[in-house]
Amino acid sequence: MAENNFIYEVEGNIATITINRPEALNAMTFAMDHELSAELTKAEEDDDVKCIILKGTGPCFCAGHDLKEVGFVYGFGDGKDKRRRPSQRIRLQMDHGMMVKSYGHIQNCFKPIIAQVHGHCLEGGMIIAMMCDMIIASEDATLGFPGQRLGFAGNSPIVPHLIYTVGLKKAREILLLGLKFDGTEAERIGLINRVVPADKLKEEVQKVAKSVCLMPRDGIVMGKAFLQLFYDRMGLNEGNIAGYIGHTLFTNLRWEEDEYNYFKERRKHGPKAGFHGRDARYEDIK
Image (cartoon, rainbow, N blue to C red):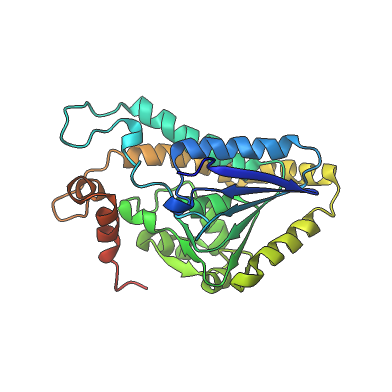
């Protein structure tokens, strides 16, 4: 485990927040969602910071939420103990903290955030990136929502964002099939702002961040405050609220005998085998 889950650095007017859990492909835990929010607060409170870069260390940006933690974080047992099912209120409180407080903070941060994406940027990692103001990715990045294959089928706080970004029909296809894209295809469908060769990614992100910093401090913050008004009218903030309620409803999902239950497979074979079993059924889908 990394000593610090995040590295915070400031150079000039740019703050860089690096997800620092490379041994787990920067998979986020529920605790890390709140830690990320605290890092954003540092940048918001530093008057010299005009722009934030969010990136990952090691092989990727963020592979999503830690599937070893999914379910257990609410207090679910391992299927062998006699632990009671966690209450709705516990699950609602946990999900509210992640999607309204943490994701909402990324979306409404007073300083513009650029997601610098390389390697995997999947499900929860993709949601984090889309909550940022811009996404710049390497050509060989893998972006998408395979976590939907757990059974969400479009139940996500990112639905409004995704519809506005790629259109209703494409958004439904992406979520219902749990699709993934390389950086070039992600740019083609409008999922990201720019795609560049991997060896040019840092340079491009720095160039864009420095361009943002040419704006005055008051203008930048007022611009983000003004944007929040439109987020409300577009339903993007409400999407986070709907997302946490929908996520809690998902934790009550019932799988029939002919349906793939990741949690059952995790109990029997472990999280890695459960994860691969989930995606193996989709091998023919491009």
